[in-house]
Length: 88
Image 1 (cartoon, rainbow, N blue to C red):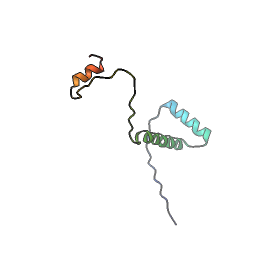
Image 2: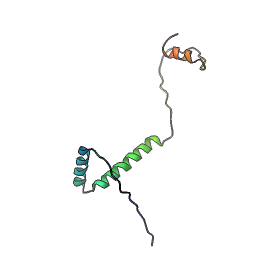
Image 3: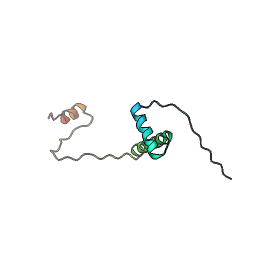
Image 4: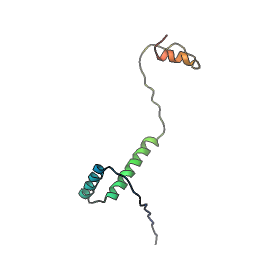
C-alpha cells in the first residue's frame, strides 16, 4: 500500500474587508471554502508569474523608417547622446 502525505501550513493573512466579503460570497456560491479559493488564487498567480518570467528572453527590436544614422563610435557616449537627442 502506498501512502501519500500532504502537509499544510497554518498562517494568518491580512485581507481587505471588501475583498474578504467577496471571497466569502464566492465560496458560498461555488460550494468551496475560503481556504480552497485562496489556495487556488495563489497557485494561479504563481503559475502566471512563472509563465511570464520563466520563459527564454527574446529581444524584438523596434524597426522604424528614417534617415541613416552616421557612423558613431559607441565608446563616445556624448556623441551617442547627441544623436539620440537629435543634435547633429
